[in-house]
Each structure stands twice: as structure tokens, then as C-alpha cells.
Length: 308
Length: 142
Image (tube, rainbow over all chains, first blue to last red; front, side):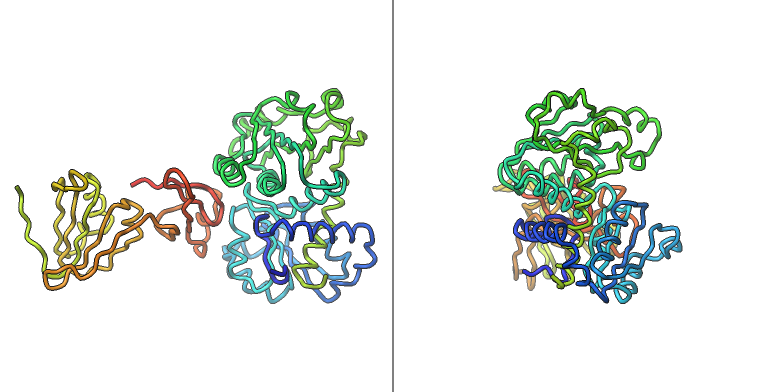
């Protein structure tokens, strides 16, 4: 089924073939951005950010502007009609006339799915609560493809907040569908992945999962290390956050035992979980990852709009 | 042995697992409306040993989904002129809408009236439902 006019709410909305098509186009755009600089001329991206975001929102805006399109929207629920109690359905019924494609970030899980049920234009999930973040997954996948050459035969470690980390949930679900992938899940016991996700991955995809509280234990065997921030905004009380916030800190000393071709990724923003001394290590690719995110979002929007 | 006469026209909910009859009676609001109904508890059954039964002297619109959710052993007999006109076997529903709430406090269904809680049965194991919005699992208990 062609991608034109479809929504992207969950990474599983895309087949493996479609994921590869988007990644391939994203890499072409990355290598030859000028060739695509006018393909969205006359198109408008609507950004509905009910929760603060820097990277995702600006990455989407940059992506649309790089293709010659324009952008409108809001970046804070307090400056939108949501503050007045307007339902998502009513907001979408109006905004889908104002824009050709919409991206939504919302603190409530499932909000972008609700939006897609009322929208006549494609809706992209820009992150919903602790649930899913499919375009970060595309960003992660394009980075793996670019630096490893393929997305298969990998031992992938996720470290940090695996309970509320939507980027982790999306990537775990998606990587499970690729060939010969196994996971090492490193987290404090309070922040382990949700049971429903673990059950789904093990039952539906039969993927090997090792759960541990030690970052060092499996580091020598790891191909990709996906670090995450302990997210203050997901805790109901400050005390729990303070107790866990610095539980994992990756530094050069720990990396001595890691593979030479390890890929260190992070969805950003980073706080303390990766020391600054790691930034110059050639294995650290998190800033390149953020850069590639713009191009994969360009590819996604171009395909949903049917202009590439 | 206790004897209860048949009904001329109405519904018999049969093969209810013994002990669940009262809950079903309440879930169908038979204790609150004016329909003539009788609840039989611990009736001798060849198949189940003991069973509960509900006889309703009326053409109620019975929600078979909720019956399947509570007890998939149930059969529903529709009676006309003292005879069984139609027999329905309930089953565990694959999809559920609006019968219970999602337990995830961050789910959009807890906030937005347009998002009615919808669930899909998870294959294998216990009767668990995945929220179509947030994917949280809810295990249904009577």
C-alpha cells in the first residue's frame, strides 16, 4: 500500500519494506539535499505540540523548510485552545483545513491516534506520553543503517529509563522485527520496561532479552548502546527522581571494555548520563543521529504527501 | 428438589458457572428494573455438576459481549410459545468498547470524551485486553 495520505502513529504502522524505503530516501536527501529543496513548495506542516519539545519540533520544522514548504502551529498547550478545554477532535477538524500534514506531541498516551481518527490529512505522532515516538525510531534506524550498513545481526543495549522512555519502547518494538536482534535492558528495578511490552516482544517476535541493573556487565558484547535520560517530568514526586537520576553515567573508563565498532546513540537531550569526555570518541554518534533525524523526517513527510 | 416453571416468552441464560449468577444478574441490572426474572443458584447439571441460571420473562436486549467476558460457558436461549426458538453460545469477545476503563492514568481515554476506551483481546494465556490507544494491558475481573 503506498504511503501517501497515511498516518504514522505507531512504528508498526510501517512494514519493514516501507521503513527501508523511508531510510533509503532519507539517506539520499542527506547526501543531496539540494535535489529536494523545492519538492514541498506550497505545502504546509501544522505542528501541534501540547508538550514542550526542542529537537523534535525544530527537526520537523527544519525538514519542511528544507523541502521548500512552510510551517504553522503551536509549541505549548498553554498558548492553544486546549487551555480553554477544547477537545483534540475539534482542534483537528479545524487544523486539517489549515495544513497539508500534521505532527502532534501530547502528554496523553494515544492522543495522536485519536487525532488521526478525525483528520483528513496525514497525522504523525511526535511522541505521546511514555508510549511511542515513531519518528525518533526512524532517526535511530537511519543512523544504524548509515554507520553499520544494515539493521540486522545486532546485540542492542538500552540503558536508563526503560519504563517511561517512549523512544525506547518504539525502537524495541521495531528492532524486534528485524533479523537476528537481541536486547540487553539495563535499568534500575523501578524503571524496567512495561510488562505488556516485554510480553509482546517475547511472544510475538521471540526475541532474546537479558534484563540487568549493571551497565558494565554486558558492555564488551554490545553492538549498539542506546543511552537514555532519566526523565524528571515523568515522576510524580521529586524524591524518586533524585534517587535515580544519576544511576548510570557512561564515561571513557567504562568504554575501554567495549567493542571498537560500538555505536553509542542517545535520543537527546542529554543530562548527566553520558560524560562530556565521551563526545570525542568516534563511537559516539548521538549528534550525527540528531542531524540524520531531519533527513529521515523529510523523507517521511515527502512520502506521506506523495511528493517523492 | 426445587422446581421452577418454564417461561412462555423470554430469555433463559443457562450454563452459568456456579457462583457467577448473582453478579450477572446485577450486571444486567435485573435487580433494578421491573422485568420479571428469576435467579437460580446451584442447580444440578449433568455437564457442570452445579450451575446457575437466569430466566427472564421479557424480550430484553441482552449484551452477549459482557456475558462472554464474564463467563464464556454461558448459553442464551430465546423462548417463544414455551419452546426454544434460538440458542446462542457466547464466547470471549475479541473486541470490547466502553465496558470498562483503561487502568493507565496517562491514557487519552481518561481525559477526552471522544476517546472511548476500546480494547482488543491479547492472544494466549489469561483473558487480557490491550487498550487500542495506549496499549496498556488490563485483565478483566468480574
